[in-house]
Length: 238
Image (cartoon, rainbow, N blue to C red; front, top):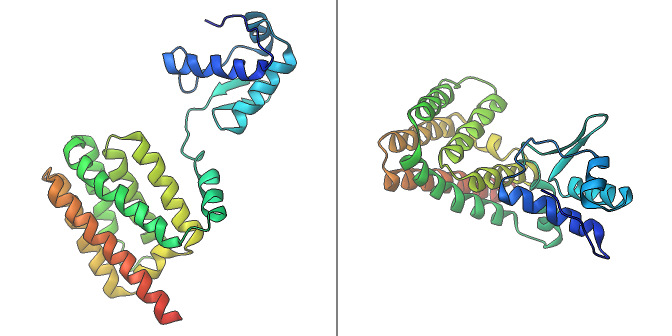
């Protein structure tokens, strides 16, 4: 449980104790924190210090404060990475190509892990997404692009690595944010759609066969094609 605090930087010590309780498993995703009054009593600090700590935890995305309900450990952290990563991207003057390089590194490895860790239920879900993607011929580009994104997210989820899943979703959002309509640029031409259908199916079959080598190879070839086409399209526009 909480212990009394004796420090000049009181709110930092409050944050430290809450983070320690999360690390120990006392507090878990979605758990409600004690009320401000209870925190004041348990930690023996002022209500102002408690509020300052809660505001700081909310800013960094660890908790969410619901009006009239209290403060909760966030149940999902998928959106927490985008703002700091996108700001860092802009401030550092990063090249947009770096986003694709990071995505390639992560997705190739994620596909290899997924081939070994995917469950039968997840395999059925991935097959269903693959089939929907291949049947999306003739649909609007936006629909096909959304299914494409869903396919890649599912593979990241099947990797069994929550860090890969969350970071990859952030990287994918960066692609959409800084490289406008990147997916649509590729699938707007019928010939490219057929290539993408074949590539997605190859990735799925490799994962279905639990071949990490084949899965990595198929994913690498797919991402190389997508990136190569994007670069060629950009050069032609110039």
